[in-house]
Image (cartoon, rainbow, N blue to C red; front, top):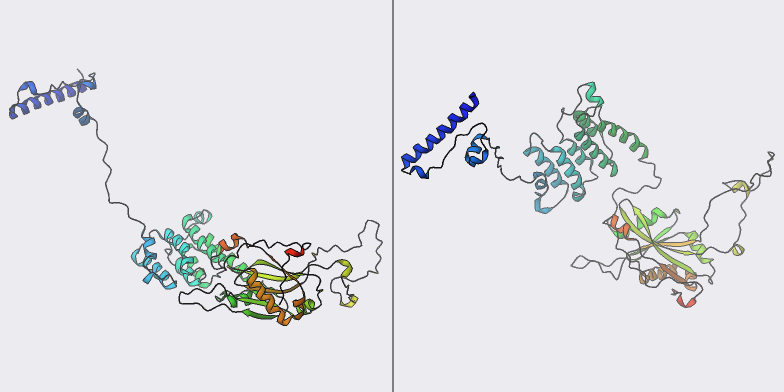
Length: 434
């Protein structure tokens, strides 16, 4: 008998003797004591109960039952605004509370990503001081590379991607970084890092493209629709002598704060050259009111209408002879002989699209025919010839994609109700007379 069989036999005999002794002490007869066979090396496991097997096979450790996982506290920081007002003060207070309650700044990356998504709700997406405050959330002197291998490989890639995300959002909103931004990036990531490379590129290209637009739009757009229409019309009209006229002011708001939709604003612009062209227009040929056409002023979309006429046929055009010394594009004749061959093209190839003249432009709070008819009536005061010219309205509904892109634009114009007219059918043409 080997030593393993001897140990198993001794354990089985001890269990049997323990069961007999326990039964004797409790007063139970021996017949009620379950037989415990000594487990040998070749005994079947079916002869033993589950208790003996469980004593030999160790049980797996039970999982620790900790408390339920609480929600991330970052959302709660932005919900603690005073009186539910979401402004710059409440946003700055939420960022400061994160630094006070979390001294070690654990989870700062998730908090910064959440703050970037919340900036538009609080109206601070164009505030440089707020972006610098978010960069200040990063721990200092921790993510800077210390060796050449850390500089070659991306050192703390998740934190560097978060810093680049902050700079990209600044770039999308046209926010120019300053010296404080540079100092924070050097203190957090060092000079040899990808956020610092992004900063250098922004400083280079932002300074070059800052004043590249010859017709700049102010950063803070007016909230009044009449002032916004003035800005849009002046932005489109190249003639500085053009005059802006307010044909109808919007109705005053009542106690509920809503304006009367039956009296929208009507603002138009017309230059002296357009008035002269309208005075010489043939009354037998109709003019058209077309629109609405979209115009984007930064993140706001406004709509305008034009008063135009079709292009005159070639036989009715008056060709004005331009002296050669007044022609700024090319001379009328070329007297130079360079030995051209028969394959040379002597005509100038200029891609020009000829369109009819535009007599006036307007922006209105509504895009229906009744509102635009008031604009035509107002134009007749300064253009008496307009009373003798038939006016045809060609109105179309604006696309919904432009309205869905911005939440501050005007209301969508109503769909046209059978307003497509044909020139060969005079019964379908609607004439606006004074």
